[in-house]
Amino acid sequence: MFKKDTCLNLIILLFCFIFMNGCKTTEILSDIDKGLGKVANTLASEDKVTGRMGLNFTNDNQKFKSGLNTMNRIIKSETSKGFKILSKGNKKYDRAKIIYDKILTVSHYGLNTSLKFVVIDKKIFNAFATGGGHIALYTGLIDELNDDELALVIAHELAHNSLSHVSEQSTLRLIDLVSQQNLDRSYYTVFTNVNEQEADRIGILYSALAGFDPYAGYNLWKKKASLNPRQFAYYRSHPLGYERSLQNLKTAKLVEKYYTKGIINPSYSYYRECNSLYCKKNTNKLTDGSGGGLLKVLEIIADVTKKASEVMIEYNKQKYQQQMYNNYYQPKISNTVNVRLPDGRIMSVKRGTRVRLPDGRIITVQ
Image (tube, rainbow, N blue to C red; front, side):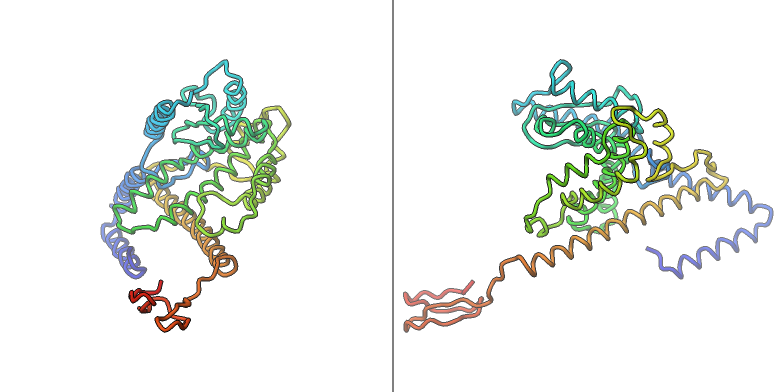
């Protein structure tokens, strides 16, 4: 990274160069801006939700193909283990598909019929997105949830795709590899946690617009909340149940005005672009060469800064929770051990000390 003074000097030199060239100033600025635009287009892509540039090395077509390939590999793996992929005519599939179609309609994918929607007949409580719009559900989850809760999960997975979370994570790993920052595994875990919170917010909006109860997430995660203090002992890729329920409650209060039970909001296309959570950036953009390139770079910097800040806030919160767990719940391990010496006496010995046992053996106290 450049130091602050170095950046300032470069800017001064640039302006000196521009003014020395007189009438060529406009051309020079235009060329610089075009160059910035090319760099931005290589490093980032437009966020479907906000319309702003975010750090991401793949375009929509690449995301679609990559996500489809990943989904097909998972299907192959699950079927090789004896689990069936359900289809039209199966009651569980049909129920989920009806809900999915409503959520898809109001989502940023609209009526995109090329997306892969998969239901796997396996008794686990899980669902996932592979990027590019493709999602899968397991029957264990479908069986346990009512329609509003199932709509929330489907909307959450579609939101992961809309927000490009899968490819964003891959981009982060590639940058880490190239820059040799060697980010700790816990950072990636917390990064995923922040993405889960973001997908929850957009998913709740999708649910409300599609006519499903926006408070379903609050009720679901309240039921799933655990009181076991062990959950604070490690970094978490998903919000805790009680935290998640309260976060969902806050979002539900903001979007409930778009909700009418069982009815898709007739103005969903408008509220999908501008609502209580965000307003999509104006589509009348500056072109590269006339300020558009610089604007893209600034948007990327803002996006990276915002995400890094959110991750560090979550990271520090979880780190503090671990410290509290270690201080109040983790069993304390004594630094000394009682050992019987050869003469029969029992003595308190510090761990790591070498002692002779009654049978003549010499050991290191652990």
